[in-house]
Length: 106
Image (cartoon, rainbow, N blue to C red; front, side, top):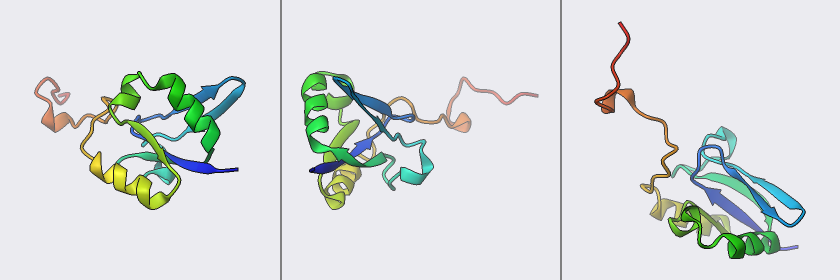
């Protein structure tokens, strides 16, 4: 069975559902499976399931905007994650000191 490493830039990850099959994909909030570029990594995902999910979801924003992708080799996954390091998902933690609308409680 051929497998891929799925990289996901959503905080909590998501499920890849294809027919009766479901695989949980790690997001960047999963500390033990995060790369240095802010992507959650999920190893050992069936390549056929990934291809089927991608075909069904190719028009979704998270695919089109590069928030989820997969590679067979870890070096390739890390290289693409590095290219997309500055890509924002909208699920990042806010930095209160950098947001004008947030005031410290007295």
